Length: 239
Image 1 (spheres, rainbow, N blue to C red):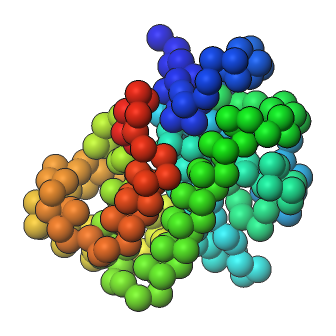
Image 2 (cartoon, one colour):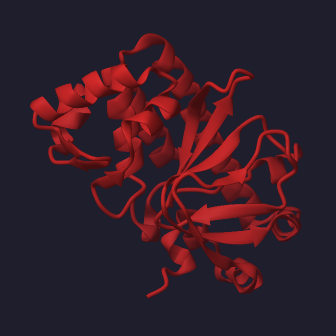
């Protein structure tokens, strides 16, 4: 059964008249783990609204090293540069968790945005949420332990998935966090011994969310509270 557009928070929140103009142009696409849907410096032609997938925004250094600056799931969209006037970004958009997303031609989104209606105000609020996440990620990566960073990353990820299961290797997590693989191995092992996660061959299951939140730094709650303030759950449920 295909997930409806309303499985994405932004598409769900749109008034019926906006949905009537946009929904016929939405294309449901399957996203594979590790797929690149946007490259740094390249003009974006499409925007993506994930429904049960997660897309990681990565900054990639000249030597190939990378670090995640934000995650986008069913709470948002990939491609804010299109309506912010930049057309391109300095980050790479990579599928972190496989699944589906709705794709929309960028000009369609810009046309609706330029009506100065409901979509404009919704996307501007979402952009502030995304900027908050980026800023908090930078602070977290600088001041908190790998274990705390991993906790933040896990919480942000499962909040955007229909279950508490993730398929992700330690090497990919290390690339996301911008740390050595050995550091992720140690941190994941500690969380497993504490009874917070089960980890085996790339499969991660969060088994004690409360303890995960207690072990995490304050960065997760800063992002969560700002999201709830700017985009209260309403009829679309929480994200």
